[in-house]
Structure formats: C-alpha cells, structure tokens
Amino acid sequence: MASSAGRSRATVLVTGASGKVGTALIGPLEDAGWIVRAFDLDGGEDLRDDASVLAAAQDCDAIVHAGAIAHDSAGTPAEIVATNLLGTWHVLLAAERCAVARVVYFSSAQVFGFAEGEGTPDTLPVDDTHPVRAARPYGMSKRLAEEMCDAWTRRTHIPTVILRPVMILDDHELMTVFEPDAELGAFVHVDDVVAATLKALDADVEGHVRLTLCGPGPFDTTPARRLLGWVPLRTWPTHEPL
Image (tube, one colour):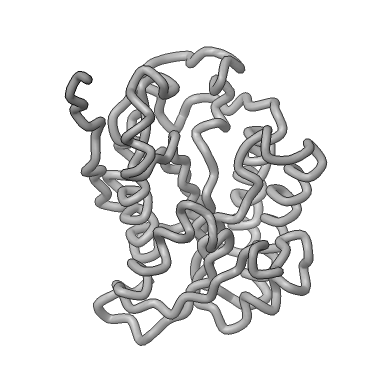
C-alpha cells in the first residue's frame, strides 16, 4: 500500500474498536491520515452477522481485524469459535467483496500451544516457525483463523498480515503486572502494538505473513523487524522496592 505520507484519505475498518488495541489504535490511525470506521459489539455491530460486516466494509481500503472474544474465560467454547472463527470468515468475505487492499489480522502467541500450562515450547527463543498446537477454544480459534487467512489470500491474492502479540500491557497495567507474572517473562506494550499495526498497513508485504510481536521475552521478532521495520520501544519498568 502507499505510505501514509502519500495517502489520499484512505478508509480503514477497525473491528474490535472498543477493545484495548482498537481504542489505542484509532487516534494514531487518524493522525497518520486514515479515515477510521469503527466496528464493535459495544456499538451494536456483531461479527457473526455477515450483512453487518459487509456493510461496514463498503468503500474501505483496508481492514484491521482486532475483534474477538479474547480469552477462554470470556465466553463459552461455542461463543468463542463463532465470534473468532466465523467472524473472521465474515471479515474476509467482506474484504473480498469490497476489494480491500489488505487485511491485518490480530492473532495471538497462544497459537503455539504452550500458554497457561497447555504445553512447553519446543525451543527458545520462540519464532514464527514454531509449530502451532493450541487446542483450547481461544488459541485454537486463532490457529484456525490464521489458516483460513492463508487459504483466502492464496485464492484472492489479497495480502493478510497476521500479528501474533504476546501479552499486551498498557501503562496502567505495568504498575501491577511484573515480569515474574508474565508467560516466559514476555510482554509487548500496547503502543508498540499500535506502531506495528500502522507499519503492517503500509509495508511492502505480499501474500500471507505471520509475525510475532514481543518486547522483552524469549520470542524472536526478527521477521516483524525485517518486514515491517518495527522495533519495540518499551520494556519492563524498574520498580523501586516498597
């Protein structure tokens, strides 16, 4: 896609616009010259309703699909799969019908299948070639959605950029969440996720790519750095002892 400096007010659909990433993303997108169209269950829009997704995607140049039920504890297995998998399919169908230039899809490092005691990593650091073995509803829904994006891109030739963040934290959460609390001591700051998303919309990327996003922690982010020119800036803060 054209760089933001040369963009003529292109429109991007952001699903999950009221979530942590969506909320943080809207302002920077607008600052970069995008017209943002928000889509979120809080606004009465449902990813499971294909007609609503298609209507929202009309005349959009790109889609950032961050809408999801974001943890196994946040819904029933049926709700998680319906929202995260069927909802993604509706986004892809709408993207095809509306001939968008690119879809940026938010997956998760949980696809690897070792989060929250589900397993152990094959190797450290974990990179994007690590097998995906997630079998619980949330991780599995993301794993299957990645495969769906890959197959869809092969058929439509519309690029899909898959972002796989580790645990996302903001400044407030960094006051209460510490390195020993995090899976493998890894996190990525929401501001760095926003920066990666902006770059994913503009970078010279073809086909289907999957990119892990991590600040500190044993995850190899070389592909994201190479393909997007993304460098995470935030690390664990130094907390003074009480």
